[in-house]
Length: 313
Image 1: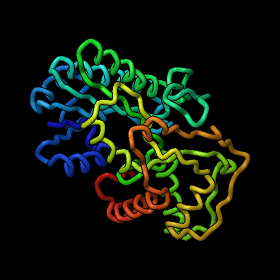
Image 2 (image 1 turned 90 degrees about the vertical axis):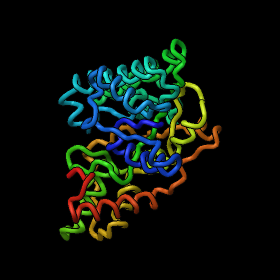
Image 3 (image 1 turned 120 degrees about the vertical axis):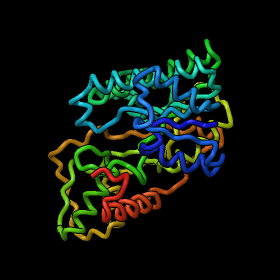
Image 4 (image 1 turned 30 degrees about the horizontal axis):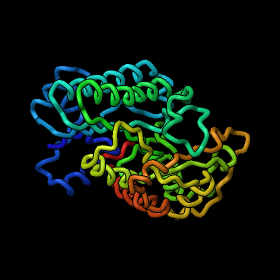
């Protein structure tokens, strides 16, 4: 039996589809916070007693945009620390054989050198705005090594890159760059605007990965033990923000001007993830950016029209 916590989240929804197709719907159980409050250790134990999984993919996390991170840093630190600690300990006590734990690339040092390799993880402090969240998630690497050594739990940490895709958070005040741009250009086209103003110069480079590609790799980590990791899961490709904006504008058929306000900051100029380790395992995230963006925009447009489930407006 395979248990996925955080199954109603962004990566969780993609992963549930992959696992059910691979292993059969009857062998995969997905839960969300509505099913079990994993902040409570007794509920984490009760969940494992009920499902009796051999494998746990612990995707449950307390996450949000930069505004929420700035406003509630203690909540992000505390909740993610407890969510991590409770599930690792519960798996050890109930004899779960394998635990897969994802964390974000935001945990890498703010001054990490691109392409960012896994061995840079503990070599500096993350971006201060998200550090309470990202440092709490970093403890998953300590937990993976500790529980392997003491309790024999085959725990592995994976680090997805800048994910985008269906089921993402498209809220205008609380979304990451791809969903934020998708919504902005889609609504500009919908409302007949003739200009969209973007911050900065558009020259910073980022590494984007289609969430469905990341989800498609989860069976590999279920079927193989590669050690505690961590291992980056990303495309490893460089995309300038200006190119991203132009591609999204084209796909939503926005025909107005894109103006860059160069008085506004660019932020970190280059953030690309090294993919050598995953490539050595024969893994890749192959979906071209434009194809993944087209899928994302099609999903967004369909759900925007109906205000359907999963679209956080």
